[in-house]
Length: 112
Length: 113
Image (cartoon, rainbow over the protein chains, first blue to last red):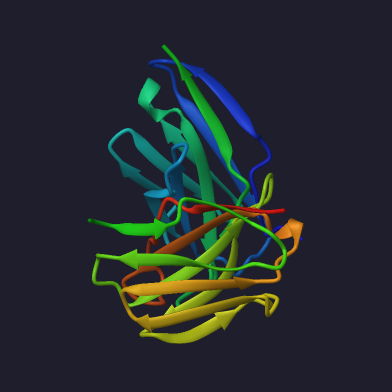
């Protein structure tokens, strides 16, 4: 059974507006979370991370929010730009030396 | 070359063939990984090598055989594969087998006929 789920396969957003990508997890032992971005014909590239001691981490236009009680995290991109169009994966792990579990990805399209 | 490179980028092989996938990282990392990504499925971790020693083998069939001759190179040897093994195979590396981001190569798109 999947421990990390991204229930929206795709999302379209107008340029300049906010993009919100969601991720849910089932394992309460997960304490470190990553977001990756993937362009076609390229490997995933690291975007932003958050550990369970925080509920928010911000890096420029990207902010990740973590709601531990709901086992939910989200990635906010604001303002969205056409170059943000890609597939976004969330990943979670249960501590040092444990593997990451990935979601199936959400394909974001930012419309100019 | 910088980052993580993988060759070949595309591979078509029959079920009786033997082939190898190659991964090389130029980041000075100590841990390397093989992942499999099938259509509409999440990335699945196959193998982990930390300081050239295999630390994880996630119940991968023996028709996949990894080799890590040094901390910069990782191979995945393939033999007698099945059509359901067709997928994108991604290599990644990280500083160590601890928490932290992994750097991925572009992947090898494998088709088994």
